[in-house]
Length: 580
Image 1: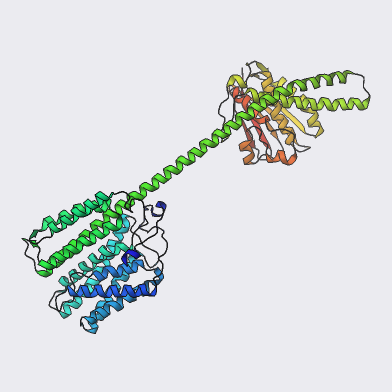
Image 2 (image 1 turned 90 degrees about the horizontal axis):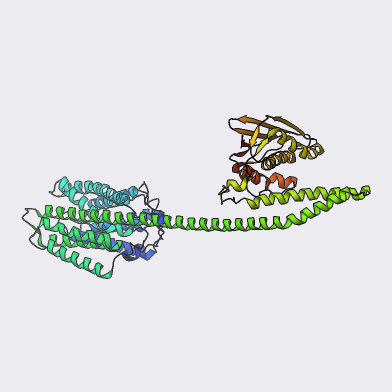
């Protein structure tokens, strides 16, 4: 029956990861026992109770060892929380029946039965099994079981000691100590079979070979026979702890607990068979029995602490290994994604460079013939057509120039959008003096038709400075910043351009009265081919490369660029450029 009760489903290592509290790991609830299971448990408890009485001298109230206490706690541990009252009722009824069977008085039988039921209830309350399943998954859980067993056994010892004092010649302390030790030894040796933790590869015996398992079992048996033979010396008995420790650290958990139980029972049997088996120590039979059950408690506690410490270490190591493997897998996926992104970026740059070069020749040809047509004497309707051709040719020429700049720069973005590389010689032509006043005047002249068409007031406050930046690059930067401000400012709005000195740099700020940018749009605004929600919503022409070119040119010249929303709701685009 115990083998069936202890058959626990495997669980993951994360379910038993050690914590700062003594709470048991999350485990599936116990399945309810069928009616014949409850009947079988009652029969086993009754038989163990009678076996305990057989160890007592005639007329004694306290048995030197009470295995029924361990079986009672085992039943409580294997019972679903909602069935715990039924288990306690069975303990009460069976203990009462066993006491009456051996001819004890009703009041004495009832008192001892009540004490046994209260003992199990106290242990269950401390372990918390009335709320959830308990498992020996860490040293803290083992300590909790030891503490709970000591508390329950002490309470029973007090009641049994009082009844023994009232009915026999034994003192309260002698009888109470024997009862408490015998019950505690039984609970700590038998109850662990009902609190086995979720299985791990180590706990199922995968860590030990057959030869080592047999060798450990044989040497342990030999040590027990040698240590507890008649006339053996008491210190020799402690040799068995060496081989118990070997099993606790290497054998499957259930085997380690079983070996501890067998060693304890054999030690008790030798003591009962030959009386005072420890030569050289003058002990009464009662004192010898007390010393033996204390020795049994020591074996149980020693095994519990070693087994749970080993299990806790294994589960912690397994959890760390799982975490490391998950991190490695995540890093591998991240690396693969980054490699794929970089490859796509390279392919896109190759496409942009190739396409822009292929487009440049036909666009130049179209522009040339459009100029010839504009110089010809054409009727008004045809001249309007030519103006449309020139206007769209100019737009296409600007787009091709932007693509060419992107193709010449070796910069690209990583997965987070950060700039990976941008050789200065690729992004900034050879420095040459550029006057800020003439630069801004040129840009305003270019953008004047677009601003006038939308009734946008463009204001400028320009300090006369000389930039250490190529004029073409500086014009491209200024044209993009001011052009964006004009495009995204509602009709009737204002665009303010300011250029001022700050040490060795010129600070350029272009502020509009538009709707600004969302945080997400500003975070990606300098990425290539990115178009924000406003651009999509307003159907603003462009392919999303203007600000990325600005960043390449400004950073290539040794400056920096930024975007920020203004308190009034517009957007301020700025950059710094070095001065001569």
